[in-house]
Image (cartoon, rainbow, N blue to C red; front, side, top):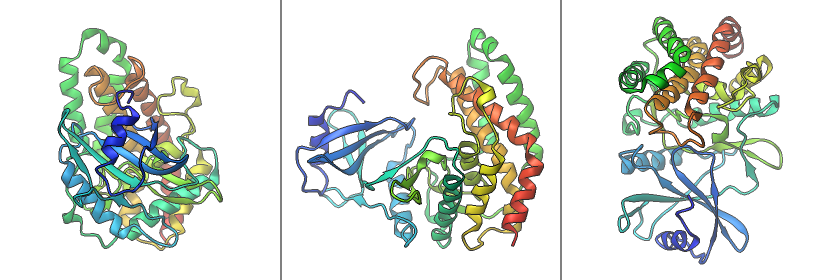
Length: 357
């Protein structure tokens, strides 16, 4: 991000339909994929400027079409609207080619909002469940076949298995020795999850990356406002969004926590999240509800095996702050996977009791 001076970023802003000039910028560093900046004019935060990583999202135009379609639905009294700022040519993104290909977009900033990486608050857990349910209700009538897959087979267990096995073939003996226990757990769990997989679930337009810090909350009253980072918005199963939320809400430790005794499965947070989901009118089938505990195991494992695979591949996908961060991510996520597995019956009872009404 240090490569982007204020002068460069202001020259990019000049391609969008805004009146503000000579803005200042603050990089936002929580994301692993895109470069993101908060845009200030006269000291007030007004916009989010973001470079979409076209090496990860190869069809940026299709991605932005997904986002535009979804934003037409995502507005309600209890769901805050986000607006894409059009370019001078009326497009939803600016394609910059003079110094190498780059795709930039500009969105309105929601003032007095905040996000959390983890939480110990049952109120935040409840609100996260409520807003994810609201998100799906608002998109319930969206036509799934009108949305492209921005990352094909994103949550496909078989694809992640193949990628993991390929990384094992090509990785150094030293890395495989360091990660030997993690590799063994990945192999064992791949087999176990294959036997738990459910079929014949309805396809929905899903967010597919519902970690807690992709939910904005009001600083004033603590209410959830909306979901952000819609790049992975595409067809999927609801248990994808459920499981991704659970892995970051029910676990109070950061994703790359190295002290695994700090990684927890907080039952009260799970209950409140499900109650928040249930506070919306019912939209899930019985079969979808039955799949939710599987999702809470599948998603942390998928993220864990992806992190382990990237470690074996010398960190070519996720940004890392230190050499073994992807290994630490994988180990942390695998530890939470184990804890979710040990709470399978608890999750089945809670989801059935709260949601099948």
